[in-house]
Length: 483
Image (tube, rainbow, N blue to C red; front, side, top):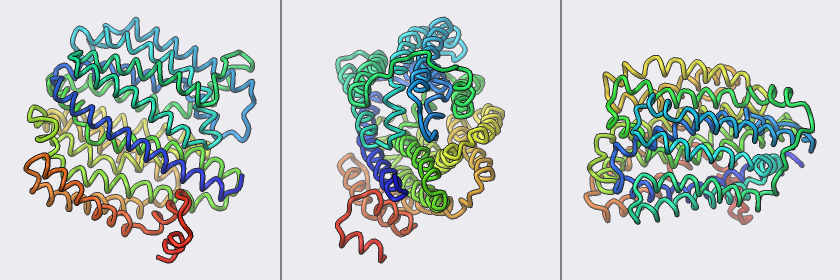
């Protein structure tokens, strides 16, 4: 595969994943509105507790075996099957631990009595999702990002169809639980059916070397997850259960953007890994273009949402969530450093320098856990949001930037400018949004200015992504190349 072909597949795959993920997040936003209307903050705290516990186990996952397979030039079938076995055995062990520790975890996180039951039910998802090992690795190694994105879209739509339907029927918090179970079971079936078939787990090669190679890739994710699990525990010393519910809900506006960033940044690792093997000379320029382009769009989107945050919370989600508004705005501010952190991490891992990633996460999470309680005590829900959303990724970026030897100053300036310019426009428009109809009109009116901000902030990066990622007509491609 040529360098041009790799660049085209990577850029096109990233755009396809971003588009499909955007559709998913739009559906998620609709679901979040219903959740806000049907579920009270105290009950939302219960699912936050359960998802924190399950999230930690998901991040431990297969100890990085799947990710460590992506940069390999070739992947032997026997190695592949042994990796699938490791993933399945670990998932069973993790689910067993959650079943046994569910009451302890619910107590530590100060969740309601039924939080333990939710943890036990969701633990089954881990075993089912381990069966996706083969399809996910195959699609990423073969740069089939379009197919991967389509399957992710189907899986997430399953989640929200079940959640929304059951919320309307009055199932309450259990609608969210059943939705997660349906997403796991039916989503895994779709992955196996359309993603290349089930890879049968089998002991074909020694397990030790596979696990040792994978741990440096998964170590940072485990540390992030540990921070995510310990954070609610730490916050119980500073916030009430109701405030923790507000803190957990406050990510609702930032989640659509951060989810797209997470999915698209996953394209960077296999794409750059293939480029390094094919044409190392172009890797540096490709890296700069990826990081710059990947910061402008999320920055502009987060800025646009920041301006509309007040009317969105008041008119769409309801006044009961107003105490979480400042935290929701801070989570949007954190999109820029979090995006840079995700892409710098992918750059390091594509060069098989995953151990360096561990250092950045360890430093950032340690500082975050050390300061979150006093900051939350001083500033409430907003302070609790600031530490994980802004402070932790900023520290991580500082460490990763030094290790990756990338001059990311231009990318950072562009991302901050796009954020600020978009926020300025929507803050002005938000003053006119006194009802839902005017809010919709203002949102539509903001689209063209925000797109212009993205284009003029860094035309070189945006043009490169469009030329590689979109099959443009010749005249339009020539126009882009001349501007």
